[in-house]
Every structure is written in C-alpha cells, then in structure tokens.
Image 1 (tube, rainbow, N blue to C red):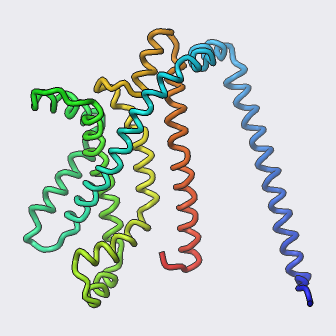
Image 2 (image 1 turned 45 degrees about the vertical axis):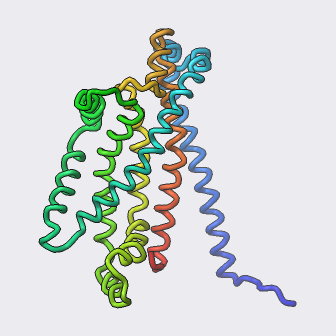
Image 3 (image 1 turned 135 degrees about the vertical axis):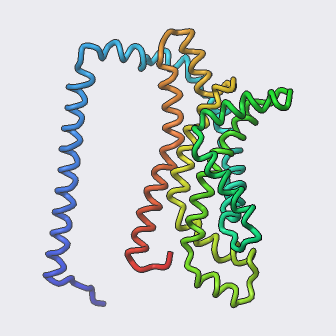
Length: 281
C-alpha cells in the first residue's frame, strides 16, 4: 500500500496558506485588543460612565425586571408567530396577483399594486394607530391587542414580502415556464413546482432580513395597550426610576434576532459560493 506524498510545490502552497491563516488570527486578535482599549478609554473610563451604568445597566434591577419582561416577551413571540403565517399567505397571494398577465387581470394587478404602495409608504406606527384605535371604533367592540397587532404587522410586512417574492418570481427565466408548459403542466402546477421553488431560493436572504425587521417591530404593539416586553419594561422602569428594564427587553430582542441574522449570513455566503462554482441555484 502506497501513500500519496504531495509535491514540493503543493507543500509550499500549504505552508503559505498556513502562514496566512496564522497572520490573520494574529491581526484579528490585535485589532480586537485595540478596539477594546478605545472603548475603555472613550466610554468606560469617563466621568459620566458611573451614572450611565447606574441608570441603564443596574444588575439588581435587571434581575428584578427579567421575569415580568420575559412574560411580556412571550406575547411578542405569539404575535410574531401568527404574523409569520399571515404575512406569508397574504404576500404570496399579492405576488401572484402582481405577476398575472393579460388585460382581463388589470383590476387585480391594480388593487395589488395599490395595496403594496399604500402599506410600504405608511410608517408602521401610523398603521398601528389606524388599526389599533380605528378598527375597534369602527366595529364598536373590543378587539384583543394581539389580534390588532397581528393585523397591523400583516398589513405592513405583507406588502414588503410581496415585492420580494414578485422579484424572485420575475427573476426565473421565461424558458423555465415554457419548458414546464411544454411538459403539460398547468399554470398553477408551473408556479408550485417550477417557479416558486426557484424564486424562494433566490430571495431567501432578503426574506430573512424582513423577518428580522418584523421581530423588532412586534415590540411596538405596546402602544395598543398590550402588556408585551416593552410595556412590562416601561412599568418596571416607572416603579424603579431606572432605564435598565428597557435594556433587558432590548437584550431579549437581540437574542431573538441573532440566530436569524447569522443564518442569513451563512446562507448568503453559501449561495455566493455555489454561484461562483457554477452550480445551478
């Protein structure tokens, strides 16, 4: 049994790559130390840091606030889970309406375009006010804040996601549609089996970015009276005269967003690598 011995040229390349990797690690460590020193000098080692730490980063108040903020955060998670489902359904319908061809579908395309233009242009907080306070008045009944918040999130984010999906659908080459129709697939089958799988792969990174934005904006449902993480933090802050509960709520939202952000970066890098390698995406 023989073992393969790399050539001198290959050994030199491996040694060079190893040296470059070691240099990269050393440079990363050095730059991190420099940044840490700068933060210490210009932020922590300042006369007002003690007051800032007491007002925003009090460990005792953070521990006291965490149970109540966490209980409110669970409401944010409920709204987020419901909104993901409703946004996906409404956005997909809007995207398909926007891509319909033929003059007979012009009214549907016009309505879908008007919907997306309206809710992409309105600030989310205005949508919350209109839905949260206008809809109960119009219906003359009390509607749970979780329903109102989910509806407001759905109206706003379905318009953004619909445009992302439409861009993905239109990015699929027309030859794919013609080939599917030549095989005898109908319009609905072509969309479901040929167009949508390719479109979703192309627009997954921007869809994930919209999901991260949605995770943050569900924290605004507190203005509707819902006792979510932000409202719970506001209550504790009013009792303690301290802003630390808001920081606790912010940390929870950050911990929720980080996995999605990292997954987006990983998928984007993987997609780029496949495209550069000439793979079919």
